[in-house]
Length: 81
Image (cartoon, rainbow, N blue to C red; front, top):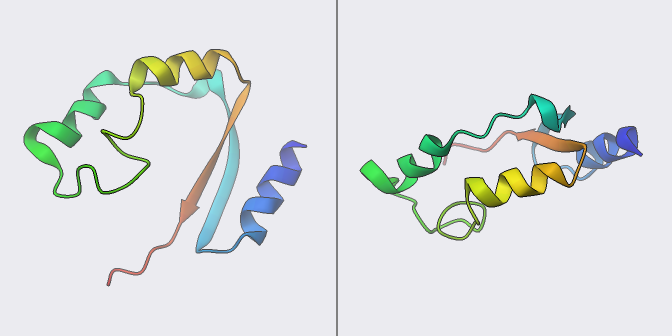
């Protein structure tokens, strides 16, 4: 199943250049990173469904990590324009 997820990520296209499964015990959740979006302020704050304030935040992410064994990370290449 794990290798199937990685293959699916590559087949999906959309600029995927790297995909890997990371064990949750290797993922560090840093609360301060979430505050950077708000203070000093990202110019795109609230513009993406994957960013604050549309996501539950670090405490909810930590709870989610306890319920799973790995996370799929996808690196995409996005045109600058």
